[in-house]
Picture 1 (cartoon, rainbow over the protein chains, first blue to last red):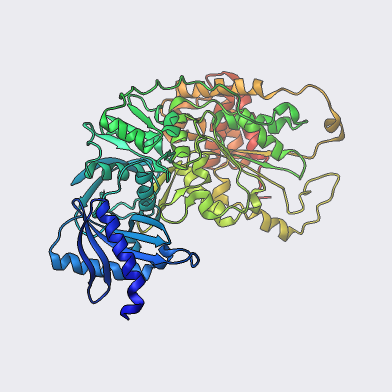
Picture 2: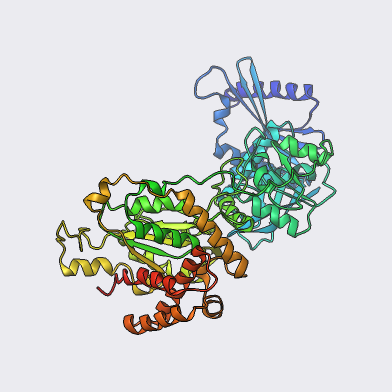
Length: 121
Length: 507
């Protein structure tokens, strides 16, 4: 289990470095609740950022972003709700996705929002 | 963090003020629009998100709620894009709130450009009626917004444009002056000089145009009924400014104004195909009912070619608007009244094969066929037709005749003068077709000879009260065309001729 996670772990470390470089403060890593897991929780000034890190070694399968499916977003959102409730935070929040593909790094700010995950109509 | 702006919704051809409130608060990112939005309003979220980012603003993190009040009116259309986007910018402190009350409307493109929307004219009128300081409208809608007297209109081409206006970086330039009124062109139409023969029908067309009388033409195929009707737009009297504004409002709401077109200059001429549906004719459709052909023909002509081919149910729906000059479309959720003051011009064959009464070609229809064909036009509908005219097959001589025929321009001049007389001497009446009861008695004074003729005709043709009124109205228009103040015997005699020819039902 741990062995298989190793490349992902590496990617998350890289992502954290990247975020710190951008001036974010890392609040938590691999925070999990019953419904899902958050790779990185960071602070961008007054904004709480839930970061999902996705890495791919080679191209194909539509890039790492494609792996953040609606179902995955939903699990992240559930976990984020739990995090907000647990930490009593009333900050504006955002979901980011960091995609690592070889040497290529892409940050997607506000990649999705609750109205995407649970459409009201 | 809170932002507030004003916009408007269209109900029928009128606008209603809609207040937009926007709240940006902490919490997980979520963008909601509440206040009974339709699908296209809900979808504006995606356009707003993209437009804000691509115009260089940040889409705020956290929870965003936009409320459209009053919440009991169903909101549809795409005009809320721009005001909601601006309200978000205000709520997140990216632009200041405007000092004055402005009505804002516009659709957003994904790159932040502002696209034109329908209904800008009634919305701007509403802004003035509510005493707002001005209206922020898409630049492509400027021409119609500028029609509104005393309105300060601020055209915007993009979200950034509107934001600059709120920041005070753009001067609040005064609206351009309303265009000078006066039709600049002759409406596209066939010319009467193209029509061979058919003097009676041409005359009937002129009378219909002058007095707004409903007209039914009956004749075999190829006699020229359709061509005659196509000449009509060139005969109709020019619109008054108020009428033009009414028509423009309808076309604005229906989204049928050409880009940059300000006022509709010419009386509408609508010629729907006979396969038209009930909703297409009177208005309706999903969600908020839209205007139908009868409303698009407001202050103009609704031409029904091959009228007996129309769905009977569709034809019967015309009865009430022909009487009331408007149509009430009632739905469970909303009732909307659309104006529908149109002149009905219809054409039909005398029988299914088209040759009944033709001396050269025998009719092959059975009596039963003919009766069924005619029954398509119900008595109550025919009752509302003032002028019946036969358009017979042309004789050989007429067909080959190359003699000069009067062009439309001459008839149009007479029609225009006759309509001016009606407006000048009959206040409250738009055309003689509206004369009824007291106004009919007041304005249709007969000279003694004419009165005597009419008395004899009533006895001879067994004219009903309604038939009598019809003859009077038509005689009035004929007298107006002749420039006579009182109706003379010759006018009555001519008017009688247009009823005698049309015993479509009774024959």
